[in-house]
Each structure stands twice: as C-alpha cells, then as structure tokens.
Length: 88
Image (tube, rainbow, N blue to C red):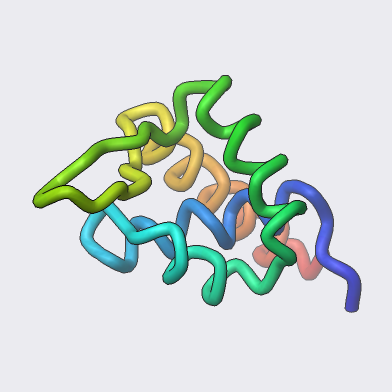
C-alpha cells in the first residue's frame, strides 16, 4: 500500500522519537524507507515547520525532535485511535 505524505511524516518523526528524540541522518534514511532525495524534501519541510531541528553532538549531525514535532505525533496518534474506534 502506498503511504500518504502524512504517513511518511509520521513515520519519520516516530523514528526520531523511538531513538530517544534524536537520530543520525543515515539511521533516519533507513527507517523512513525513502530515497535520499525524497527524504531531503521531507526534512526541509519538517525543519521549515519547526518539527525537527539539526543539532551537532561530538562532531556528528543529528535530527532532533522539537516540541512541535512531539505535539504533531501526539495529535496524529489521537486521530488514528479516533478513526480506528469507528473502523475507518
């Protein structure tokens, strides 16, 4: 089944959350199951919407989940539970 844009965004943010709130770009690439080029487009959008931030730790670049990104995950999970409760 083809993933929608919102599913891809959820998968990316969830992958960051699952790694403790920050993730290496290569790990996110594997977990998001996207081409490098498509992942970059999504990353630019997520950064633009302040859902993730680029941070550096011990000379390595990470993507970090922001409060806005956490809020999106929380609301999306609520929406999923709501639609599943009605069998949709």
